[in-house]
Image (cartoon, rainbow, N blue to C red; front, side):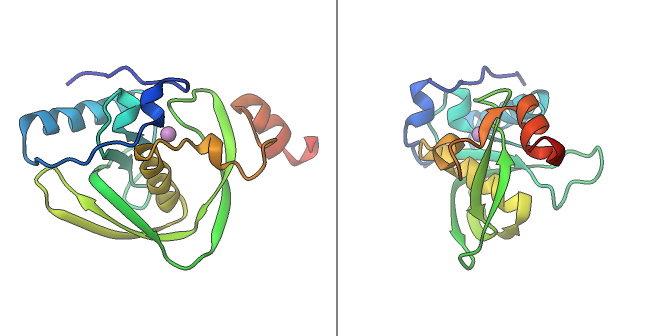
Amino acid sequence: MSILKIAKLGHPVLLKKAREIKEFSSESLKKIIYDMSETMIDYNGIGLAAPQVHLSNRIVIFRNPDIEEKEKVHVTPLINPIFKPIGDEKEDDWEGCLSIPGMQGLVSRFKKISYYGYDLDGNKIECTAEGLHARVVQHEIDHLDGILYTSRLTDQKAFGFEKEIVKFWKNEKNR
Ligand code: NI
């Protein structure tokens, strides 16, 4: 396994629509997913999409906050994923991205979704999600369509360096 280089904001691979995976169960697919997992864990991320490691393919991985227990990492790979909102309720929360290091922005996402995709061997995975789990899946699937959270800010002003956001947006006293 190896840690991959992460594409940063400004790299055109982050703005492209990624290609579907047609062939499952291959050694190369397995290696990509293992390397992506190692990379995400090393960078302490909760999700990673293939375009972020310069691969324009429809693969995402994420840590599932519903399953994860304290200190135990549970990585779900999802190939050719698609989501649908359940209801139209949305929720605002702060997001970060390994391709935009050190920054945070306030983003509105569907509160509840259903999603499906495929595992390494092409078995269908279907799930419903809400809260952080739903947010991570929507953020990662956006990457496959070349969309970064910075184009979904609820307010153009609600974006900045993490340190300042914590100080001036999350700390009520300074608002
Ligand atoms: Ni991201």
